[in-house]
Image 1 (spheres, helix red, strand yellow):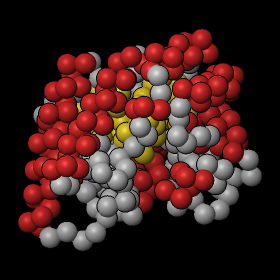
Image 2: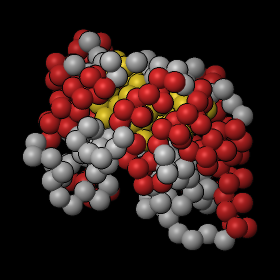
Image 3: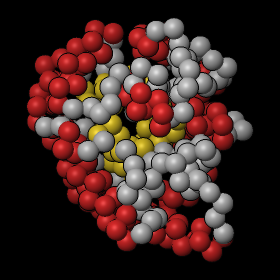
Length: 281
């Protein structure tokens, strides 16, 4: 099992120049970095990989940023835009030596409204249809897509582990797995450990976040039960800290971070990693 850090804690957008962060991440003890790519034009993947290799840190995952216009359940134009974007991320993941594309790879974040059953059925069919195409592309490239349910305030489409598993099984591809996040599960699951056990071998990626998006371990989440559940299903993937602060204004607004969660931003990474390594012993 490897421990990683999502670069959104320190910068947005991530660019080729942002690779200067890699040495610090490695000095703190992280094994991997998770890179949200807001636009494929922001990075030269070959240079980013070279910088990671030089720093001695792996690029464990590329995070899809499903912004406006990228929606597999939207208009034909939005579906096409989302497909072009996600395929570009898969292409970059190959160059980066990165095994996984993760995140809400189904709809624009923030689209949350009451939807009639007939429309829900239609939107579900559109997402499954598009993901089947994307999954075939990813499988041919040797990349796994890990689909993340978000909380009810960020999407009305996929909120729980059960819904995520239903989508994974509907796509029917070995290149598609589930991505769970303790922050979202804290809102949507009655028992996070039970959700992890239910995901089982289909769990492909895991975000370890404080209940308030702060430091893992400095919150009320039942971490011992979560660690036990991850071990019980034989999870060997990355455990990534994905937390946000007011220091990165664009992400703070997008994630509704209106106050300073921790006294110092670096504490989330340093103390969070120390907690996770101790918890997973």
